[in-house]
Length: 147
Image 1 (tube, helix red, strand yellow):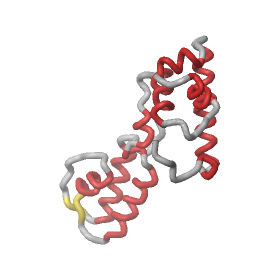
Image 2 (cartoon, rainbow, N blue to C red):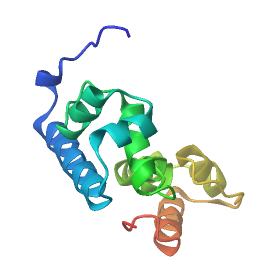
Image 3 (cartoon, rainbow, N blue to C red):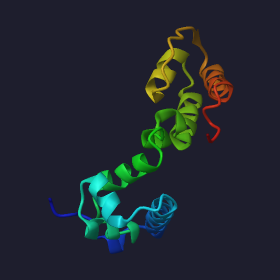
Image 4 (cartoon, rainbow, N blue to C red):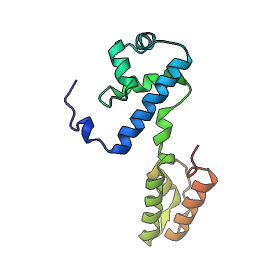
């Protein structure tokens, strides 16, 4: 395994807390199923000591091991949905500001394509209308709301 650029002790506290919470939830899920660390380790294809590290919230454990735990708990959960382009509220808001500040005529479809939510609208309208339209589209599709 290649050397890490950032030591786990240098991670932002919010990241460490999220990993710890994930670890706690993994422990609860395993115990509710009345399974041992060794049983889960076998299912994950890792050693029991690695499973113990996962459950202790060790941030140096491979992400794939944590994702496998999530899959064991909820096979239908999709981790990628958490950071899908339509869920990236900060980027969507920046895109709206960028469009509003252009002051030129733009294609709404181009703006939507830029932010990755895919639509084939090509009506050319003013920048203010484009930003308003984009904001309305986001709201109408519920893209700005948490799932």
